[in-house]
Length: 422
Image 1 (cartoon, rainbow, N blue to C red):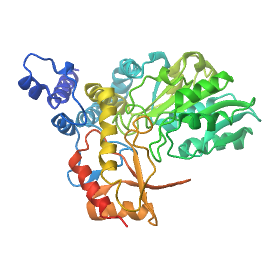
Image 2 (cartoon, rainbow, N blue to C red):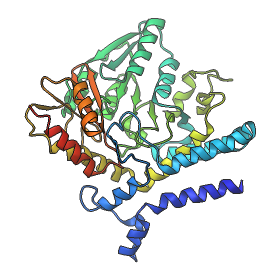
Image 3 (cartoon, one colour):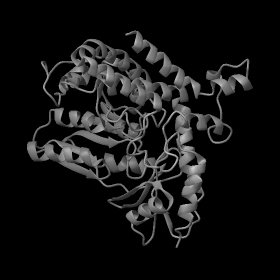
Image 4 (cartoon, rainbow, N blue to C red):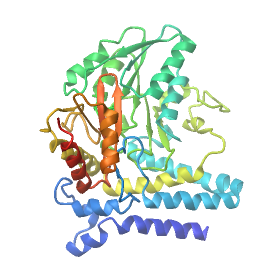
């Protein structure tokens, strides 16, 4: 255990080393670093370059697909490696008698960021597991209606389709025109699908295909007026937008922690409003499936304790940056490249530049060019990694920077895109 404490101290020191402590202390000897608030768009480039040092970011490949999965900070990777080696020395002892005891402090820390009670937070592997647990655990019967969007994530759409096939529920589809900056319209397309048979509405907070932010709270309020429950997919909004879960007015919520929180690969979180927990059957077996204890959703058997322990180190880095500053930086990075290519002939954007309606994710395309061709050229000629999107009426390339992305890297993207104009 002395080795473990030593590792934790070393990791904490590593997190602090890149965090402006030395530079800020030299520049402002009488000011505490935590009190300094810089403009993320202009005068703190040195801060973000030091944040980059927290990651093992490749100097050869420009990774602009952080919307799929983000890399973990070095401290997180070191923690996972350390705890994995510890576990393998005597697995049943270290996993079940030592590391298993640390889940409760982690739960409390995640709940603090989420603005929720620890008794409403379950730790799992990703947004799919979190949201599928709710989808398959809801007490729905034949004829009950569920409102969802054609732009929801495929794993959730397929889960609802399985319930349709198995239980005879009815899926009612929303098909919005995107991107949109019209809050009344975005609320209306959901509200007009509600009926006396609607039991739940599924809302994707930030649509992964193009970064569209939906007015989740307003849609939720309209649903609750009619006694309809709300399930919210927050895979692309948690640790991106500065909010607390209760702000959204939902009943159920799920996210992946390996996206913008930069947790270990294969980490996620689920939130269920306290009074709703007993009514959801767990996806996997539980001694008491009707329990009101959120931990009934964590009966996974043998799991990766090292991955769970690593989440806390990513959480430390996020808190060091601050939610508001991080959101501002991610929006700045998205608009940085979009604004520099908006005059390129033939370019089309599937993402609004308005910070109310988008943040990190941007999507662009060219008339007459397939997204796959554009993404392939970006990588083969410029070593810029993006992802092509062809989903419903969106046909473009998704570009997603993260906090370790530099403006120098985005300048290379801009140069590449400008060279593709028709």
